[in-house]
Length: 499
Ligand SMILES: Cc1cc2nc3c(=O)[nH]c(=O)nc-3n(C[C@H](O)[C@H](O)[C@H](O)COP(=O)(O)OP(=O)(O)OC[C@H]3O[C@@H](n4cnc5c(N)ncnc54)[C@H](O)[C@@H]3O)c2cc1C
Image (cartoon, rainbow, N blue to C red; front, side, top):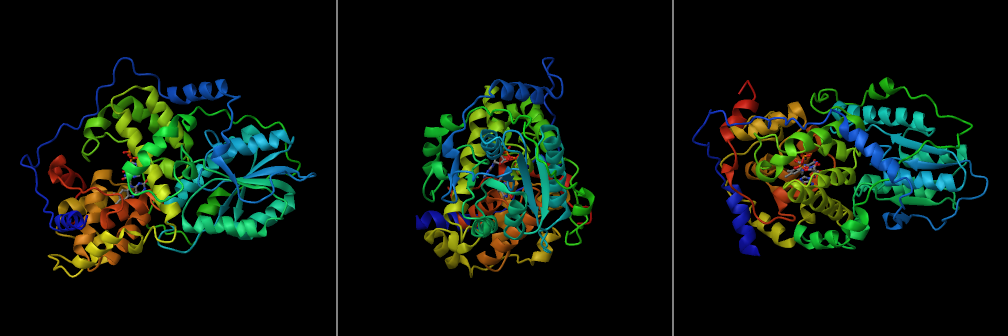
């Protein structure tokens, strides 16, 4: 294992990018022709509405939930059920909300949703992320209005505002979703400590298709060790969704009107990182992106997914990250196409993605530090920590895309300006940071900082694992091959103009 790692890390550290011979030539990068069978825009929304309506009676698989408190029964006299929305910011295709609605229906109670907004003053609290989040939530609140569900935007940390909100409204049970990062797990503990003892507190993994705790009870070593476990039970969980229906029991005290513009005007937000043009927030926009993937790009995914110049990826990560679209919905619709790209796409969307939740959940204290890497990787990184570096850059130089490497600068510039970077380039980008900084600890901290500040899909288990994978060998099997795509074309397009 050691020699593999040494070879891997040293190979990575000595990688030399070679420009392709047809530098400057326009590589065919056309979108495939739209066939005459192309359906009307919006066909997907229509189709899923029909599917949900047809599956109204669909059972809720209890393995998706777990009780965080001992009490399982709603106390008599309660005036409603609450879904504390955190990671899964959507109404339909959301198992946490489906469960909350069923609980409320069983007890003839009104249904409430709350989101706790807390803006920390930090370089990671960017306007880009919060505008995507808040505009997505605004769409949720509008949808709630049409469904007779009360939506509340609470201001403060969950432990400080949620238990008192519940007692003030006499809400008898709270359902929440699942995000295996340290801060949100701490919020759960804080809320649990302050809830009245007889209040059922239920968690539903509404993000993963196979719930994290069902996929595996321990930290998995690699995709190959979790793949079989997920695939063995995938059909139990990759089901249709029932419709979240108009709720028949209305609350006597309605929710306070939300001032969305004011929420977005928080002085703590870093406005120097602005909105992106390509990614419109909200479930509707996410579904439109899924529709265009199915109609146009999916057929290229199998063969061109490693080419940053080709439009072959789904581009769905921001909507999945904010829970504005469900990965299970994406998987269901993509599977229906029967395309040759289904298998490689499901590998990314399900196996790779669920592996990152597994890593963060079962390695919760160390998912973002070198100590979270395997011993062999730590040793190899230590052995090479003193290797002479041909180039050493500061965080500021990297942030401003001021390196000698045009490909790297282009990738960094695209992330800063567009809030995204192609998956294949992300590995190259992170591995180069390792090569160009003084220590692996510094490399990891810079990679996470840049990814989480600029990538719209950042601050997610996928990002922690992506950086740990590229820099510390987590789940890795070796990587290379600079010649998979037309490097010159990419550089030309994204090279910052002042360099
Ligand atoms: C250094 C580095 C940092 C990364 N940071 C992030 C991040 O902050 N947020 C993020 O969502 N992904 C991250 N990834 C994983 C991956 O690169 C992105 O998910 C992908 O590029 C998003 O584009 P897409 O939606 O078009 O992906 P597609 O290729 O169309 O895949 C569909 C979905 O599958 C999931 N997926 C794809 N690749 C991976 C992967 N390798 N690991 C886990 N899930 C995957 C994503 O949810 C993605 O939206 C990172 C990877 C690396 C190497």
